[in-house]
Structure formats: C-alpha cells, structure tokens
Length: 523
Image 1 (cartoon, rainbow, N blue to C red):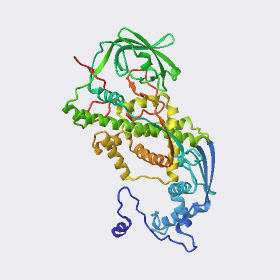
Image 2 (cartoon, helix red, strand yellow):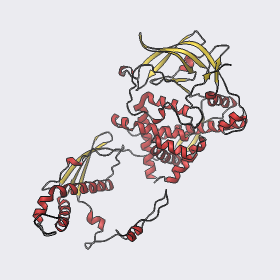
Image 3 (cartoon, rainbow, N blue to C red):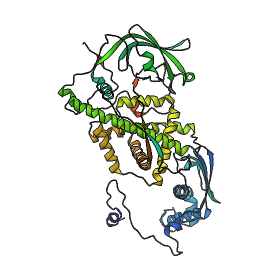
Image 4 (cartoon, rainbow, N blue to C red):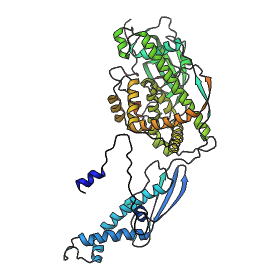
C-alpha cells in the first residue's frame, strides 16, 4: 500500500464519535455484490442444552473450501520455490503434495474466522463468553464439507413487556436536623477520639471494647480479644453478618455479656456451616463514646468547606444523593419484578460464579457514582457477599433487562460520557479526574463504569416515562459496622473472585481511610 493510498484510507476520527464512510458497493459480473459473492454457503443448527447455553453445529459447503484451496495453491504455483524447478514452473500436484499441511492449516483459520463472523451476523446469538472451540482439533477433510461444533453461553432469552408508562412507587423523605447530625457524626468519626462513656450504657454510635467468642451449639469456633466495634444496626464480620447487632447490644455496659446471632456467609471456612446461624458472645470490657474533633477553620478545609454551616449543607446534599440512590434501587426492583413476572429466570451456577466479579464491580460503580463513601460501600459489599450467588443472580437479571432495553432503544456511550462520569466522581470525592481514572484502571473497573452508564441511561428512559406514587420512606439506619475478625477460623472460601473494593486500604488522598477506627486518646 502506498503512502498516498494509506492516507486516503485513514480518516481522522474525533474521540468518542463514530465516523461513517460512504462507499459504493462493488458489484460482480453476476449481478451480486462483492459481499454476497464472498459469503460462505453454510448451515447452522442450534439447540438449547441448558439455561443460557446452546450447542451450535456449523456445516461449511465443500465448494467454498475448494474455491479457497484452489486460490491458495494457484498463488503458490507462481511464488513457491521448489528444488529442481524454476520459480513458477513446478507442477500443481507437486505444490499441493508438498504444501498441503501448511495450506490447509492456513485455510482452516481463515474459514473458521469468516464462518464465525458470518454466524454472528446472520443469527441471533448473544454470547456471554467465548465459545469452547479449539481450532487445533478441527481439520479440513479431503472430501465433503467442513463440520465443527461447539457450546457457548448466551444471554437468557425473554420477552420484554411494555416498559414505558409503568406505575411505580417512589420512596420520599424530608431529612431533619437529627438526620444531618447523625450523618455528621459518621463522617467525622475517623477524625475523632474515643473516651470512656460516663453512664456506660451503649447506644448507636458508641463503641464497645469487647472479647468475642463464637459458638455453634456447644462447640467453640473462635475467640478474639480486645476488639473495638462501633454499635450500628448491623455488624459484618469477614464471614458473616449479625443483622440485629444494634438491638442485641443496646444498653450494655462494662462487665455485661451479650449473645448475638450471626448468619455465616458463603465465604465461611467451614463448608458445613455456610448459611448457618451461630452465636457470638460479647464479653464487654468497656463502653466508649466518640468525641468529635473541633471544627476549626483548618480542619474544615479537609472537606473543602470554610464553616460548620457549609459542612452541614454538604451533608444535606449527600443525604439527598443517597435518597436518590435508594429511589433508583427501588425503581430497579419494581421494574425487574414487572418485566420478569411472566417469565422464568434460571441462571446456571457456573455462570453466576464466573460473572460474580463483574456483577460486584457494576454494583460498586453504581454506589461510587451515587457518592457513597468507601465505608458505606464496604459494608454493603459485605452484605452482598453474605449470599454471593443469590446477589449475583439478582444483579445479572437487572443487567440483562437493562442491556436489552439499551439495545432496543439504541442507547450507546462514547468517550465523552466516560470523561463526564469520571469528572462527576472526582467532584463528589474531592479528587482530580486523573487520579480517579488511574484508580479505576488499576482496579479494572473501566468496563464496569461503561456498563453502569449504559444501564443508568436505560433506567432513566424507563423512569422518565413512569407514573409515580410517592410513599414515605420509613426511617431507617442501614449503617453497617465492619470488623476484620472471622466467626470461623481458617482460610475464607471465595466462590468467585474477591471484589476489588474489598481491599483493606482505600486510596482516598491524604485523608484517613473510612475503615480506620478512631484511636483512643487522652481526654
């Protein structure tokens, strides 16, 4: 190709846009277009072999194989160097015998590539993974057609009912000063100090210094000494969740013992105990309260504000953003329920296991986009990990529904959408866009970000046309306290691959990580 020709073929493209080329379609002497004349004559047989799995058998006509083989050998007759013959003078039969393996291997690769591309263009197949096809085990026969078969995982096939004009219930709430104060305490907690609580009775937001012993029946599973736990409605260990932790320890004081129920997660080291209820006895040594830092002008600069009033205003924005997240999650659940009510959704376990990381990544990106803190995200992910396959199945169903709507409505994104979203996350977290992008790329979350944007646009389309009935959002505190201890000792079982944000440390600039607990200081 000459430089001039290459320059003509390469048109400048603006990032994030699609450059369309208008060309005349070549027509052969037979009246067929060039594309039609080069298309393979092949038959495709597909049958379901399980949920989200198809077996595909492709038969490529012998005439197409011979045509390509003939072309390759004709080129070799002209170009090949064969001992005893001048270039281009070797007999065709000698060329075929000498170069048979090389030519058939090359033709096999070209045929498979063209056949698979044509298969994707002409058949309604939406693969989730690459087909289990090994080209090395496929050979071109001396006679007859080329036949190859493979299994492939595909997206579930389901009908979408009318998703416009849906009647949805929208939770609404007006935040009070008490709500703002509670959230302010949570935000300032990593900067505070723990001091003994004079009256000693534990309430939400206090901290327990306690020993913890877990039992299953009479058997002692584990014992931990002198751990510090924030009193929140729920407590998430690395391998289980105490759903009623706040209620079961509220009012406790030093010297008390409290027994708390813990449901073990899919990650528990002991397989027989996964999903089982165990009891944790907390031998409470001391109850401490949190002394918040003084809101000096210098300290407030940590949050990009100049006064306590501005901090309160930021917290109100954060609460509103969290409410919007809850509203969207509620809408997603309602939309999914309406769309899947008439159909059956069966997803194979092996698919759920492989897709779990992506499902977690999409959920994490959604929470990041909603402005949730690393501490809140960590707690929510611990809850999702409680039953990995169930939470993955729910996330995948939402994904398949929204992706199908995006295809029908031709919703797509470009680099500008990615840049805008990174800019938005950067503003919410007081970071530079470059730092946010670097972290997303490091954690392999760019694909999840793109998917989250597409699904959000699809959901927005549904929500924009919906009819709403506002219903009060019951006052709830979904805070989750997290600790690194395990109820069952041993290596955690990971049915998939650990979500990237479950790391011990988070990169949040120079501020302390949200997981860091306040350290006790002299009062």
